Image (tube, rainbow, N blue to C red; front, side, top):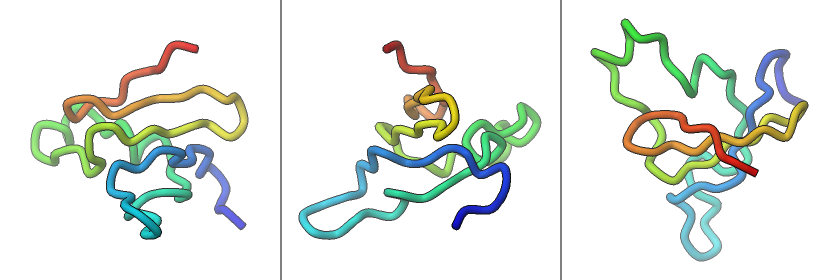
Length: 75
């Protein structure tokens, strides 16, 4: 069961290898965990490695981490 507001699920985790599920795969996150406020981004680097893909479980929207930024994926 996921907490309320944790609508973004990791569907691609570049830390996966072989049978190891990776650090983030299958985890649920809030949008504010993925896209930090501008003031925080200046001091705190993106915690997710490049290539991590999140999918919104309500809308199906996807974002991928590219160079420390969340970038919306085109269908």
